[in-house]
Image 1 (cartoon, rainbow, N blue to C red):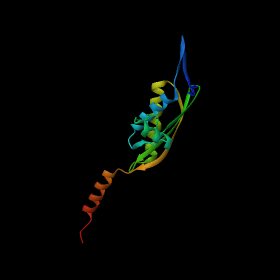
Image 2: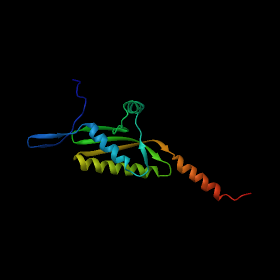
Image 3: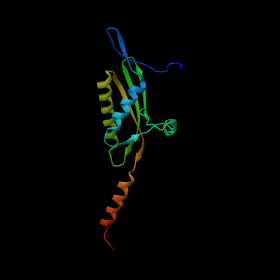
Image 4: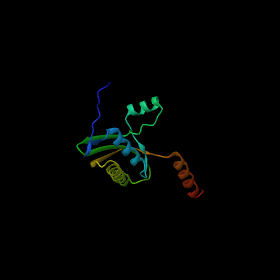
Length: 142
């Protein structure tokens, strides 16, 4: 059996045991919460995550999220791609709020920090063509 590399967090000692979360559980919650924020095109994983996802054929629900757990506190790093036209700082603040609230509500862990890294801007090709058509229609003919 492979050695257990997971870091756990004892949320609270209850009569007869304790509650432990694997970092992948917290990362999955953070990924799903961040993906719900308006203006987020997707989460951005590493090159290794991208290749693994293509080979495995399944969606990686921890993509773009790194979790560190110490005691009953979690620190989360989220890498995102933001949609063009949104105020990046507002999208990032909304990600921080949504992820923090969701993790604290679902797990009982305290979230110390959520660091958001904007990796890219997503330009939707459909919107770009529509904007070009509108711009051409508005120009006076010579």
